[in-house]
Image 1 (cartoon, rainbow, N blue to C red):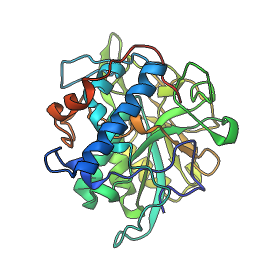
Image 2 (cartoon, rainbow, N blue to C red):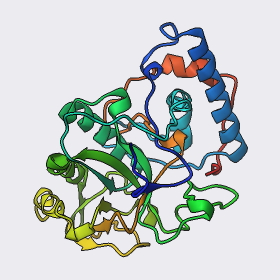
Image 3 (cartoon, rainbow, N blue to C red):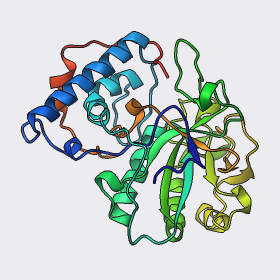
Image 4 (tube, rainbow, N blue to C red):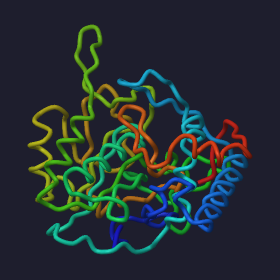
Length: 308
């Protein structure tokens, strides 16, 4: 099962990509196309009702500057395809040895998830239902009613920022691969030249606040037997500090909080925050832009904040 209840909690259940998420409308069955259209309609209604908060995610390799709203408009077909992906159980991953649940966060979780998904594919040969990277929230001391943790919303229900959480991405990976995923995590920190100092920090410094602080979640935190692999991958780049929950932003501090995931569990984010095409790397390519437009035309989107 993924994610395990001992680590991952929240209002959303674990997700898994469907087979149709990789197909064009021509290759899908009629029922699948109808399901996608209905899912897109539902997402459109929800997003219009609550509105979407503007959030620029800066780019190193792509000059476009898109808000989170614009990105959702461009990529809502992914969300439509994902609307049918909710499941409480995942098939066991075979021939990968002892699996462990960890999470990593630094800036916007869309970029972090994209990079980890690509590494799952390349290193572990995973695809489709075997991909485990999920966006979500972690590192806060509080939860909402019934253990809910949600994205910013007009009603203020279980707002992850107000509860002290940061955006993060959880994975279930072989213990022997923790070093590979940690290497990728620290490679995502980029160098900024500021007068009088060289700074390594997240790739989207325009996203400011505790919600975007740098965190790593391990069972046992800095006492975990996995922590030496984290230290080795870090190689002195960032200062690793034990997290106590509700920490401030780490921007310009070259600092990463290491959380005990048993004490600070991961909460899976909403469906529309899963599997977005990245802004700093090649896109997933699951759904062509032309396909996205087929589902977008009947609806319009507005700025604001979405329901959690």
